Image (tube, rainbow, N blue to C red; front, side, top):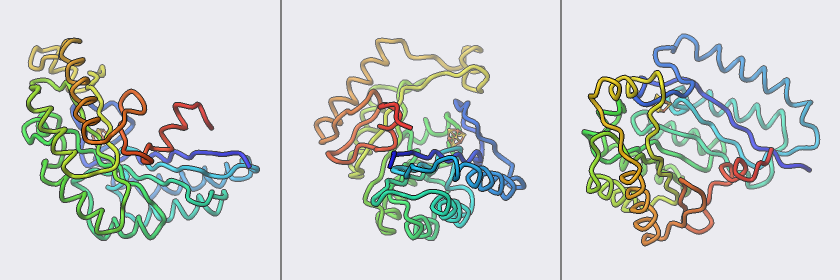
Length: 259
Ligand code: SF4
């Protein structure tokens, strides 16, 4: 059978981060139920088209998939399994915001078969988190990792951002150290891109926020490569680092131009 990867988008967030141009919408609680019905309809439509395939990886991204009731995610996965066969040991990831997780939600995800959690940590500096418009504090990242371990997650990613306006090299080093100290299996480190139309772009245009120059971005990237290598994380693509055997299989499907 041919291998297939599913990306399931959940376009809802508690609020909009200053740098974000993803398809994600705050304040749309009234649309959540309708959205999932539409997603399930689409899945039912695709099932017959995908005869001969089986699902090797699935990824709930967003948006903030951990914002909506966990039962909607579990039901979506169940409907995926009704529509398509899954390979044994398929990797199933959910992206989460540390400010939206509870032990109960995490248990529902595990029971549904989700085996990988990707947490949007971004920084371990509360001032930088506030300037990005994140809804969580740094301490909640550690709490979320502990809750996830208790729920049985043994494959956790932290997303981090660098080259943030006002971010110093010391702040970036401290964020890398804090991420490493949590012992997660995978770390993604993305340099900030100022996207047109975002509040961040307006701040830059008004001179209220400064974009890092290429040399500064480069220096921070080199710092990530060396700090994470020292801690046992191999860089397996431009922005992603993993302990041996924990490279994100879903991510590699994109890089290898799989289906
Ligand atoms: S939580 Fe993620 S998707 Fe939602 S607004 Fe922030 S960056 Fe965008």
